[in-house]
Each structure stands twice: as C-alpha cells, then as structure tokens.
Length: 116
Length: 110
Image (cartoon, rainbow over all chains, first blue to last red; front, side):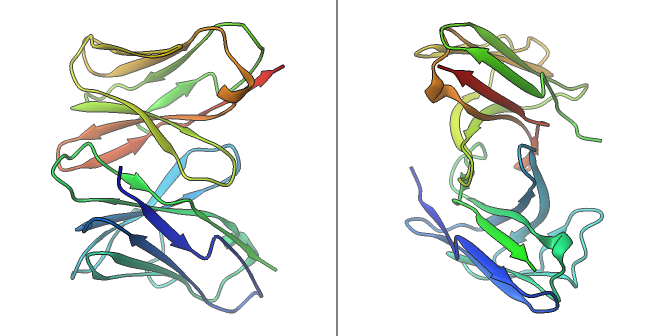
C-alpha cells in the first residue's frame, strides 16, 4: 500500500506561536489530501480538503485564517496552525487520495500538538 | 451531528468473547470502510464493502454491508488483546467524500 508520512510526529509550542505540520505521500502522487483533527478516543473530524495547486476547501466551523493549508506539489501538503492556543492542542492526521480508486485514502501516522 | 453513528461508543470485554459493532446512517453510501486505530497512530484500513448485503471475512472479523447501503456491522469472534483499539467506519459518497463514524473504543482484557 501507499505510504504517507507526517512531520513532526509530536510538537510542543508556546501559546501565540505558529506551528507547521507536513504531510508527504512517499510513493505516489496525491491530487487530494485531507486534514483531520482528533481528540482522545473520538473519531476523526475533517478540517479541510486540499487539492494540489488550488485553495483548500474548509469544513464549516474551521477557521481558514487560523489553519493555513498549502498543497504546492503532488506529494506535499502543509498545515500551519497560526497563533496557537491551548485549545488547539490535539492529534492532527492527514490522508492522501487521488489514485485510481475513489475508495483509497491513505493515512499518515499523525502529529500530536501540545500548546502550553 | 455526524452522518454515521456507531454503537457502542465504548466496549470492554474479556478475551475470548464475541462482539459486534454497529455503524448506522439514514444516508446511502456507495461504499463503506472499516478502520482500526491504535493510540498515537493513524487509522489502518481493514476492509472496503461495496455491494448491498455484502459480507466479508478477515480471519476472526466479519464485516457486513446493509442491503440498503445505509449501515454496516463488524463482528469479532473470540476477541484477543491485540484487537484493542478504536474502530472507525467510514462511508464514501460519490466525489470521494469520506464521512467517518463516531468511533467505537474496544478494550479486550486478558
């Protein structure tokens, strides 16, 4: 199966700073990448859908100015949490799709963000 | 409000017991997937079901897609501690829209 990586795997930052999380598809080109947020023992909440070369589509209630998404190439999408606050602390997961079958979505290992 | 409701939300059972997790919706999906996720990791795909009424078996796991393609179930026989994790169903609509269920956290006690 396809491999998706995320970097960093965990990060601690101070309130008010910005944090960038990278999502890479290592062995295939992903025209579409998805960003999710997850709280402990809860399901994934879709934040935004990112298409290569175009603006991301954000889900209702997600602040696009706070969660900046860039999908500059077919193998890389980034999520930047700007002016982070403790309530932004969460597990962020990306996934990549875009291969032949619409069933396919490959998940990264996630990034644990803690804002102090 | 999430499109797919899973039940139960939490489940703690003894090793060797059987269990069933349900994934229900009022919406129709073109296909449905089940994932298992361990703490600190991304979800891992277990199965994709496409046809209404379809049943798929994966060792001790049996997956069923409802006839109307609105619901699904996951049955685990003789649960083992290694089955512990968060189980997620995901319904897929046309246009590659994924809708995740509310999740079921399973703990199998040795």
